Image (cartoon, rainbow, N blue to C red):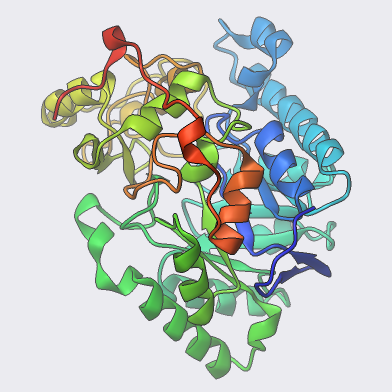
Length: 401
């Protein structure tokens, strides 16, 4: 385990390093990454979405299937395997959490499976998890952590949950201006709203807790989105945060569960390669402008004009509401599970590669989880010059901006 001079994060009786590894799907944060993070005394997170893709036997059963029930069952088996593997790697240290999108059709089933598999925490984003207390009634030891972006959303959760005699065990405050993947804003134009700024949300949340008569020590606040330096960690904790959450910097570590090409795309992306657009889930999203995404964005307006309800292209029906399947013209018009699966496998031309907007702690070097956490805690960088920078093959280069 690592140690820190910074104040520790207190969660369900555990004292953790104030570093949270965010959940990243499809399969980018599975047992190897989450288990490694937890083993060092920090907060590791498995993304629950379509984890069967890490298990060849489950893919043999479901790879060509259009049987939703079969695919859903395989993904629950995969989630159980991943949680147990991560817990074994952690050796009882840290926290192994499961991130679940409220927007997925099997949200409730994933929550129940995460709890039954003995995950230490359930983290929910991409929607307001108003029903999370009911879903976890039989699992009081599991920490409940909603991901929210503004004071208004935090207030809704706190007031609704208080009526159910339950409070969040922590709250992740994610700034959509900088974060990767699905963003907590109503539209792509709204991600820069000043109401999402960390100083605004932290101050407003602390006042809200006071107004509601809640002890701030009982609900740690975790800030996420664009964090890439020790100085930011210190500054945010000085503003009232109890920990910080990072996604992209963990995705590109040696222990990250995605293909090496996935990591190369993220570390080599220039600022002009990173774009924000509407996902099929009805939320803005941020990713690298690779060949597939560039081609899609050129056709997006036409596809949205032609949108109409149709059968799920893969028979998976992964989202509760899907712009492509349900013909919602304001949403994205592509199969997100297919494109994210291509990215997980390292297919640079066909994949959708989620990435945050900010620079990475170690530039285009791929380093270990331990080195990343040590740097965030202490500001001491490893000897980067000794590691050759990775490169994407020239035949799979990013699309010029």
